[in-house]
Amino acid sequence: MAIRDNAFSWSMSRSTRLAECPRAYYLQYYLAHGGWDPSAPPEVKEADLLKRLKTRWMWAGIAVHDTIAEVIQAIQKGGWIPAEEAEKRLTERMRADYRASNNRRYLADRKAAALVEHEYKEGVADTTWQALYQQSMQNLRNFYAMDVVGKLRGLSPQQWLSVETMDTFDFDGTPVHVVLDLAYRTADDEVVILDWKTGKTKSSDYQIQLFCYGYYARSRWAAAKEPIHLEIAYLYHREVERVGFADAQSVEGEEYIRSSILEMKRRLVDPAVNVAREEDFEPLPEARRCGGCNFRRICERKGILKNLPPAPPYGRSSWSSARPAAAPSSPRG
Ligand code: SF4
Image (tube, rainbow, N blue to C red; front, side, top):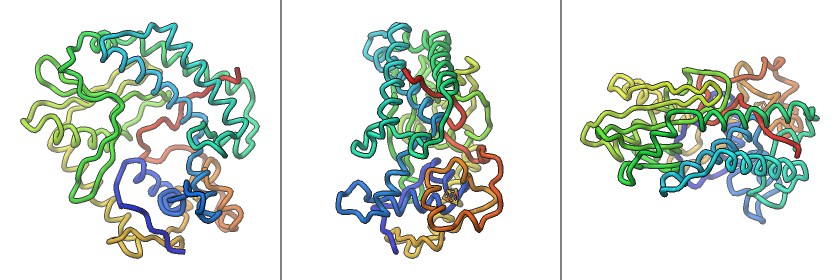
């Protein structure tokens, strides 16, 4: 079956998916496309459902990100959310999400939380959920203890550039999607882009993602060559790591994106209209993540997994990106 997507675009998460497993990439970005339509074929609806699943670590990281975004948006409007109130919101959010996912409300409601662990009945111990919740709360408390909060409270309205904004920039004619956690301008006219990380692991894997943010910022806010600073805020460690956006990095980042786009297009039946075939996206045994993959039900049913060598330990690839793949999650409440 040939599947047509609406438009080709590039993002770091898309590139990561392809590097981890081309088959997962096909299922997520091509077969699942249009699964929201009630008249879509059953296999498209199934892929769309599985595509929406999050691991408990991703889910917890998103819950913390969203709560922090609420606090920052309040600051941006000149207000404030005390830590106790934010903790209450995070607790209620995680409890509600957990219950909704456990009851599989996501089958009827596309916006409801959908966890891999519930869809695949993985039987995670209560103590594991509790530990994940506790770490999420700790991340939120650490956020309040970081200097950056004081800095943000001191910004004038004109210094705010972006909070959790999804946007697109053009790269050699291809739309590139970015979601910036936070961007602001300092009193010295420097642009600072800050990205929250909720996992325990510090990593150098974020370089391309940060390059995309810098590239976007250069075209959007800093055309006149003001310095751009890219910062990773590791909530678990209560540390901020600063990386410059320099020309040398630009060359490396541009080369990465260019070759990634070429690799994606090389696999298409017709790149001009973004048409893909399943058979052109074989599983990649040495990089696959079958044990924790959203789509393993489809691959098991088709007998694909039994033809592959045993899976390597589940973990992150060298091009792992943005959202937390190794953080904590929530309470059973
Ligand atoms: S289950 Fe394995 S082979 Fe199938 S899409 Fe996922 S990672 Fe790829």
